[in-house]
Length: 165
Image (cartoon, rainbow, N blue to C red; front, side, top):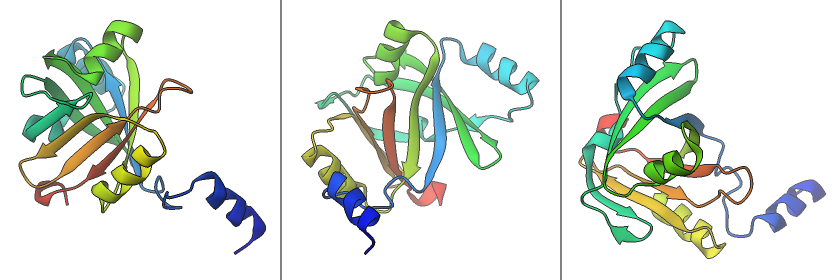
């Protein structure tokens, strides 16, 4: 292993070197979904379709079960990037907190993972709290990590289920 690779590994003990290589999505919080869709479609982004947020069977926010937490999520492709619009609808959500504190804007970027449980263990062992976790009806699941310390950005990992393969 080259010296620079060894130095990089030392900075990330327990993390896979390719953890963020499959980053594919930018998530944007909005107050009014219809207005946002109309705005972005005028720019040539779209069409928008329902995202995985509508299919959660279990949701935990800040470590607590949150059966009342609801989001409306729509996705569109922008080349190789998936563009996700998220509108808080009910209950306490990370996106709702972001909207209250910062207004509309980019809340997260997301990468695919094949083993969310292992990556979750690795990131939490380094002190990154899971601030939102959900399981989907098709067996998929995702987690948002509190990485807001620098840049205010949340990092998300998504393990796809049967519907999103």
